[in-house]
Length: 539
Image (cartoon, rainbow, N blue to C red):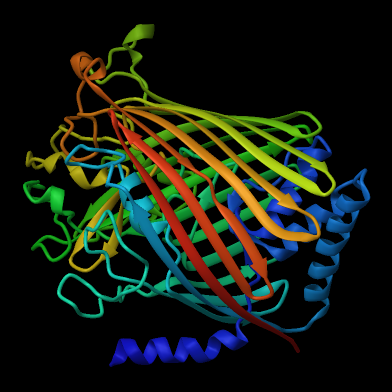
């Protein structure tokens, strides 16, 4: 009854909701990114979501576009954000209903291994729209605002071939609702040189809407404190997030030792992930340096160095930490083209340069991305070309040294770079700092076409993925294994062709797909009908 009451309250407040933050896949950010790329300037944002006041500042700094269509698009954005700024208090929101039906000739897994990399879970569950979404919030354009969003969606039943996104019938012929309904709940404050938010929200650290070596849009949400400090050409983005220590089904045989425990175990453990990203923007080139650290604290023991920016990466070695170090750069080398790369190290072995070190090898990962956009009225197109690689130990971790009392750490298993999605009693595992987990090589081509004056959008998304079958973040030992690096690989390919037609508040979608893995192939098709009701109020 309590959960049902919460849903009813959010249903009412959805008609009076205000959302002043924008994610990397929102229409406002996509439009502004396109205009920056067409001007041959790198987009200044590095971490999402961002505030409307930040987007207004970025829009006002942009030179006037060449074509009339692009000038109108920029003027429309500026007018929208100026209207929000001029209001003393803003209320805006929407209620959305979606139904999706899935057809397939057979089920082909992206990862046939018993311990999966998360892609099957994403395609079967997370990428489907919730049947009902509701939101509420309010605030000023600059200053304090509060936002919340509820997803009413089906419960995850380990069904990798769902018929639809509705919550009936379930395997036992009951309504199977995921009562982890809060998808967003944020209290935020933003100003010219400081943005702070606390709560649950989706997060993406990276220069493009593609893959990242930080927490990214591949994850449903993060429970976090976020801090953004833009000062001229320099910016700092920081996020401290907690991860529930829920045991996944594939972790049933994992022993954590004397110091750590999963949720409901005798020893309570807190898992945190902290990301730092520093950027310098020079117009055509943007360079960044950052890191992400995952650490587990037995009995919820925390020190101030576990929380403070910068010092969080060192902690004076009071406790072991799983740290990854990342370099990135974006270059708008030509109007319409932006080249980006991200290079990360999960560990660097010093033996190669004469420094005594362990046998753990250097653990690299890299992503190369090319964005291409063009406008030829009535057509507007966006393309993303991407290639990536992760070492077979990327995201993995163990720590075998003994603390002062000589007792075993239990290899600090919970410090692996793993995101744990909470649904029912068990957690679903997703890679925290890569899109497809360790031991992967991939290529991706994503395109999107829109037509001015006609409410039709079509696209294509081709993924080619090769993965070491025995590499995962659960059972793979944290040790050098040259045989594992050369062991058998799976090959997966997926081609999705989404098409959407919008009429007033309605949207109708069709997405035919071809999926192939290790010689098995299947055709899939998803039909969707969506309705969105929105409203706005300025005080």
